[in-house]
Amino acid sequence: MSLNAGHPTPKSVHSLQVTDATLSWRNLDDAEERVSTHEIVFTIDFSTAQRPNYIVYVLREDADAQSHPFHLDLLQTDAIPAELRHGYLINGIPPHLQPTPSNKVDVIVSIKSGTGRAQSFWQAALQPLLRSASSHPVVEQYNLVVTQDAQSVRQYAKTIDGPPSAARTIILLSGDGGVADLLNGREPVPDAPLPLMALLPLGTGNALFHSLHKPCATTPGPTPLVLALRTLFLGAAANLPVFEAKFTPGSHMVAHADGSQAALQLPHRRQVSSLYGAIVASHGFHASIVYESDTPAYRVHGAKRFGMVAQELLKLSHPYKAALDVRPPSSAAASEGEFERDAHETHGYILVSMVSNLERNFTISPASRPLDGKLHLVHFGAVGGDRAMEAMVKAYDGGKHVDVKWDDGERVRYEEVGEVRIVSGEDDERWRVFCVDGTIVQVARGGGMSVARASRELLRVLVDEGARA
Ligand SMILES: Nc1ncnc2c1ncn2[C@@H]1O[C@H](COP(=O)(O)OP(=O)(O)OP(=O)(O)O)[C@@H](O)[C@H]1O
Image 1: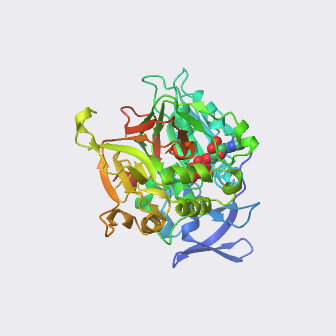
Image 2: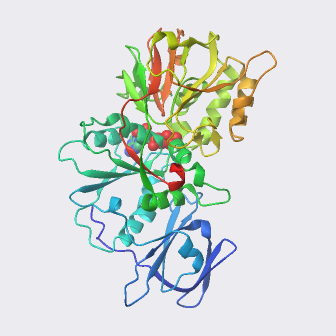
Image 3: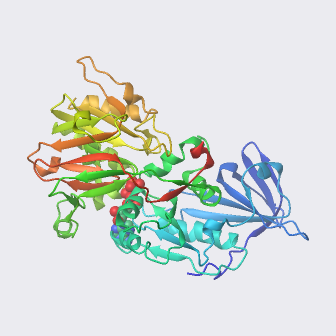
């Protein structure tokens, strides 16, 4: 795909002013228009010695407009107010977004992520932005991958590590599942440069994006997609910490649980012994929500699908039979003596997190900081639906669930850990599911999962400077 196929035409404007978080300007016919400053992505300075020339990029989003949810305004002007100089003023497209023989740039558009807005975002916002920002001819083409099926990102990931090894930027328009597919679909060559991933949060939870951008997100403030575009152009590269979840023999990945013939026929019961993750590994309530909400019928509800399934599962309030062993973070090696058995024989919630947030407002691990690479355990026993609900509601209140204690001595256990092992004691396969970054693994009877930080790094990620502070 050539990005030089046509530059979007900017609109000539004048008299730009910023007042009370509003940017106003006049069009050529002198009509005034205004937008919130939170909708300004950034300004590119294309000035030459002969002529000042700026383009201000504005992303307008309308979540209710199914067919055209995004619109990118390109405002061309010869003068910008001081507020735009202090904000996000750049001189053109950064090197990591320029395709050259030594730097490949791939764009992955996962069309079924979230509520299916990735394709619109690419066509109406990102593609025109990249075209406009590339003032010089691009010498090679961007590689555009639009997903054809659920395996597309994994198949793409298989192709990226072969020789010759050039630097590579992957612009990922998806949710967390796209990241999981990149981490697990690859066959990395030792010493090959780590690909650089840019996250455009177009999934449902977008846990990794929201956790990495927590220090720079404000309310009111820019939308996640405005933040993401700023990070895409202005962000810094950082190694992405990852964990490895290992599974006992006989474990397999499963697709979704709607029980229909079509679902049963999907070729998704693949054997698995280990998965890399960057977000979360869980068993119990969380894993069951992810598993049972990943049906086409629930997916149309966006992030609400988790809450809908959670209601059903809370009614059942299943006590998950399992042995839980925890190794503290201080013990470097995984020696047997370092593990401590949790006193509970049945559990409600067992979750190991490498990030602070599973959704924008759902703070599962308030002590986690972007890129700190630490694992935190969040656990409670089979405390019943009402108390589980109480804890979950507090997670939406800035992560207050971690202080919850009940009168009978039960509490939410929250601590940094080095490694966690869970062995299921369930007979019914419905309750033997584990979740790694949205991928569901079902273990055999008596099987389980162990989770610890991985010894290697697999990807770099673009982050806001604030995330590295
Ligand atoms: N063209 C397609 N056909 C069928 N399935 C697809 C297609 N494109 C993507 N998918 C699948 O859709 C799912 C999208 O997952 P992703 O994690 O990106 O979004 P999400 O689940 O909505 O968000 P999150 O994980 O952040 O909550 C993946 O399982 C992916 O394999």
